[in-house]
Amino acid sequence: MRHAKYSVTALFLLSALIVHADEVKEKSVVATTDADGVQRIEVTGGDYYFEPNYIVVKSNVPVELTIKKESGIVPHNIIIKAPEAGIAFSEKMGTKPKVIRFTPTRPGKYEIECDKRLLFFKNHKEKGMKGTLEVAE
Image 1 (cartoon, rainbow, N blue to C red):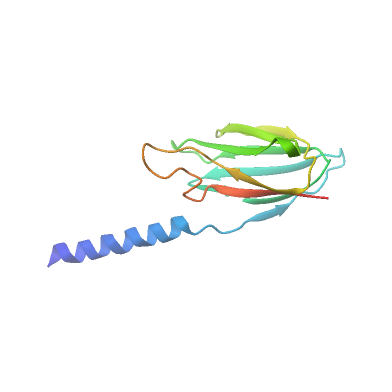
Image 2 (image 1 turned 120 degrees about the vertical axis):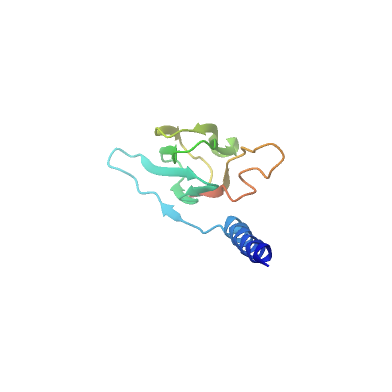
């Protein structure tokens, strides 16, 4: 009987973790332009999330994206593949901040992702480590 009680508890905790892992909450930010004419945004990566995960910037205004990850052993990166919009990078995220500079040239919505994966498990994007960069007029 005691084993059944532990099995039910473990099953409940496992299902709660699975539901939580698939639940991605939007945390958005609209960049403002500093006095020097640059839009600056800070993005933190962690256990299968980016914060913020929805970023709005203006077209044809330089952007400085400062990235870092929370401490821990799980590797993360940040990727945007939109060369047609002047945005194309794939950068490893470390615990020390790193600045990525670009000037978006075309309005639209572009996917942000982490493509890291452990063996045969889902990649980090599939676990929720994704977002959107919206370039507005």
